[in-house]
Length: 296
Image (cartoon, rainbow, N blue to C red):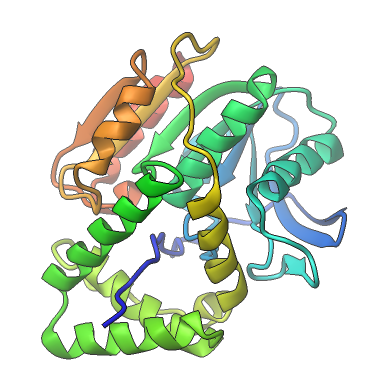
């Protein structure tokens, strides 16, 4: 059975209103973004996971919005961000952040990335080091190319160990249908993945409106591009601070070693009593790290 290849984040359940929302064009792509606290001088851009799974990470926004202008956006092909006839190359993803920074008229900014978004942040920082003020990599995917394949296997094993036999078969079937282009199949699959991610912490509440934002095309095409993309370089002497955090019961295994070798000077923290969604599983410890890092 072809198993789960998706690395997931979950929609925040809290309510927080953006000060501004906008649709911006980048070639054939239209990106939907939200702006919080636009009166603050420095900017943090949040990169959600997936690929292909939107998440405003409102708990993170809440912690940062009093000090920073915080930007969230639905990545290309996700939710309200349209990608009709456009591509999903990694260079396209880099150009999306460039387009956002140009729209906001900012030369440099902080990046916070979760899961696939943590890998997205690494890719952007390698491509545009002069634009990055800091990196917070929260439970980041470990890398591109063969390393991405390793993370897929680790996530597959995590889900297998945490799902019932019935759910595991259902996930595999919906994963297969999703690979053939079914949005609904991926939407059903992610409900079960979320259940696994939160198994030892709480029973998640499902919001149908959230799952309807998930589309098969960005999931499938981005994965193919990540497998083809070059291995990332080492960040030996970054000009900015880097934080890497994992939950002690996170979804990744030995592939983390490859990531940590690329960041020899980064601060690395493991959050106890926590899985892949730190701001939900252990918010007090996660918020402590967040405040310490951005205070620095």
